[in-house]
Length: 282
Image 1 (cartoon, rainbow, N blue to C red):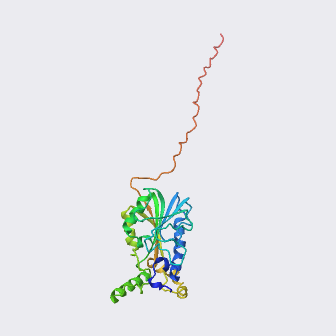
Image 2 (tube, one colour; image 1 turned 90 degrees about the vertical axis):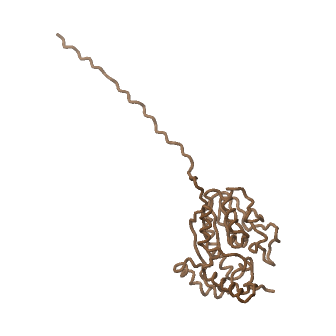
Image 3 (tube, rainbow, N blue to C red; image 1 turned 180 degrees about the horizontal axis):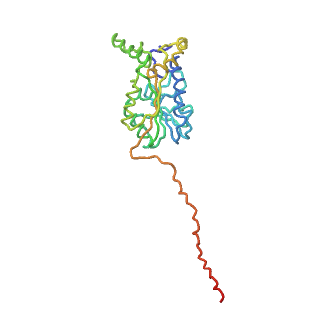
């Protein structure tokens, strides 16, 4: 029996027309954020349907899954793994299952951590973000992707939840986005990062089309992408944000350079020549 897209969790919802539209936008934006991040170790937390590290050139890249989360559950009928089993990533060299609020990495050991819709479905988003701060090296980077509550999609989700509470039906049949998760606003997330000594460097919004379920109607509103990016940029359905971990008292310096020695010049020799004047002959 086919599932109702309105009550699906994130892995199944991403297979719907609006889900594929979302993944296409996120893939292009995240690639631009991670392509020029240098280091040795990169980590992706959750969302195996989207390889967010494919454009990065670090030699060691991992995909971490949280099996008990609705975000990382394998869709029925699709190749995947049962809860608790390791799921191989598409491009990353290794994969592991762990709790996102207790990462199995040493402090200051990772150069890049990407969280695609991770905080929204995390058991403890505050602790997850603190763990990311712990494992990042000074000047390490975190890239976060999330749904924007202040958008047409967020408004549709809020209206669906309000209608469900009013009618007493909790099946989530009127929801447009996945029913699980607590969507975090862009400004709220910036405040969290600021408290953890992160400095937000860049970000952006996207997916301005209305909350429509069919590919045909989504294509009809393709013109809203350029219009929304120009006239109401902060009301996109999804945002991506990149921040750098700053450590007080530390200063990044370049490689030590040997002082250039100036060639020593030989001391000038001053000769005193005494000219003996011949005495005139008498």
